[in-house]
Length: 163
Image 1 (cartoon, one colour):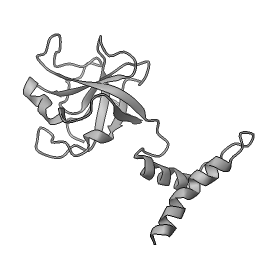
Image 2: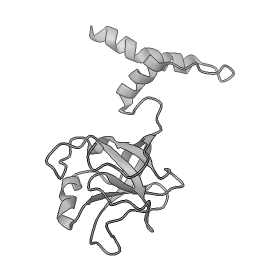
Image 3: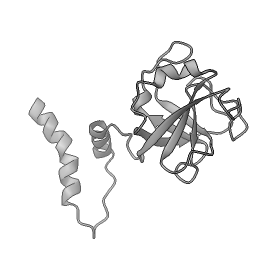
């Protein structure tokens, strides 16, 4: 069984390696899912490796409103450089899956690019943790030097407080 699964997983990689540049690569949804399982990315999405920082309300210059005019949402609002990721993007950050949410539930990994910041330039992301410095504790164990950030959709209106 293990050998069959390994062969099935390797098949899209072999097919991709044998494709010539002159021929367009056909869409392969099953191969995309298998590659996604192997790499930890969502099929069809771009994944950025971004350096992260954390912020909370009450910190120097940080208010309770984001740059699109909505209230910041703890463990959901992300500040981005709009030249890298467009505002209103729904983001999936796999390293945050399972982290504790303010209501005690487990984080599903989804964040909302609803804010910008003066120091967020290039391959950086700033994650809003809550209303005090103590709210940052849940994310302190992450490797903030490199998070896997995948834009997976677009949202309208304001980010939801719970997904």
